[in-house]
Image 1 (spheres, helix red, strand yellow):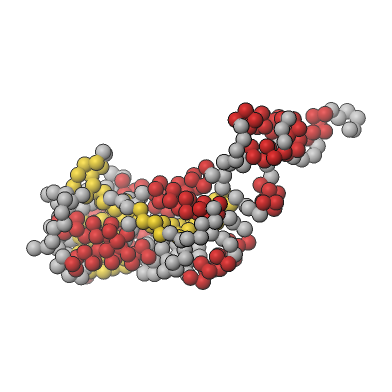
Image 2 (tube, one colour):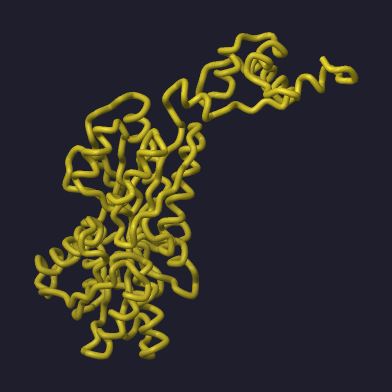
Length: 366
């Protein structure tokens, strides 16, 4: 000890480690490790004593050093597509909350604008993430195989893939779109239009299939089709062209809320259409802005909290328990009825603070 240096100065002159905390708290080093490991077993009184010693010494666990020993980074990579769609930030926040409660941190990756993550996989592998969630992005079979070969568990969120070896969690795309078609038909609409998202995404394909198949099965024929690519400006352009070319449909189903909000803006502001008297507009997601009074968008809900909980559960099964059997989870939602679409005389029920489409029977055309 240098002259004039007291014990406290000596203590902070080097990095404090777990051994120092264990000595001060009167416990083993393994007990200190367990106290800072989420979910690990340690008595409450012991944990309290360890945390007090750690505060006294100014100790913080070195997660990087721990990862070198355990070969676990406690980091989950999350690849999120375009963040301007409010569904994605809400999902990211809920997913982060779920994972942090289990002691994991989220590392965000933003794919190319078309939503694919293949070109960014090298970055994911370099960060040695313990798992990967693909949130509203697409993945090729080759990427799935590369992740599998690298030992990185993958769960797809709000997307599915043709590769049966990859687990996924999605909303009820097909049945939700069928419910929208039934609702619009029951409201007296006869001239339908569907706005597609990105052509290669499972969400857009499944929602289009559900919508068009119900109309065909019930005698309404093929709806008009426009494409918004899940982008606000592209959706605005598509609706402008639809309105200019005419005749304007009396019901427009957009493959997500983001495009539906663009459609509302164009129809109201640029063409003076009355919503829903002249045209009903329905979205899919029931994301934040859909509930704002200025939009009051009728939309099929995707319960974010349930979807992120299921995603976390699947991922932990893969990481912690080594479960190898892939699962495809579909989370059911409700068609939330607001002011952007005409209401049928029957089938809409008040559930707590909102209105939900719940018809007693399916009514065919005629």
